Image 1 (cartoon, rainbow, N blue to C red):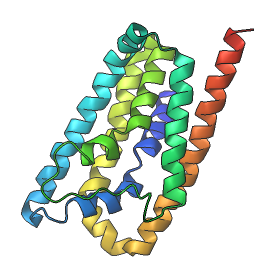
Image 2 (spheres, rainbow, N blue to C red):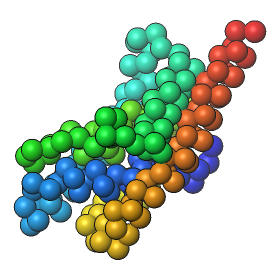
Image 3 (spheres, helix red, strand yellow):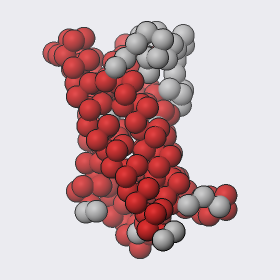
Length: 197
């Protein structure tokens, strides 16, 4: 996987466009003057979490005796469940979380930006080709950097696209994530079968 494709993959998995609705909902009780600070803080926390998983996830996996194939299949399953909830949202199974006060780490940083699928993706990248750690770090930074202006402009984007437009984008991102989830599942299963022939 090239640096560009890894960055695009991570950007899609972080799903900033789909997260606009959830960010606005979580920030509704935060004063407008403070919202920008909260968004930046949560994005930095998400970046730190992804970098920690990038560099420490592999050793943790080996310590627990988990295989790369299991991680790929597990990440694919989680991503599939999230993607299906994006494509077919219901009141009982919405990704939106109720936040009564200023959010801190949960749910903006984790799981909205640095969710299980994003963490699984960075783990897979590093575990498959650890020698390319500089490229994977750059991919995380590029994807995160592309998310920052979208999240900071979430209020304006909401006004431009409206609720229906944002829902349409969320479902489109969900369809793309379903495809990525299927690829992760197929790759994990194929690697497992190849290893046990």
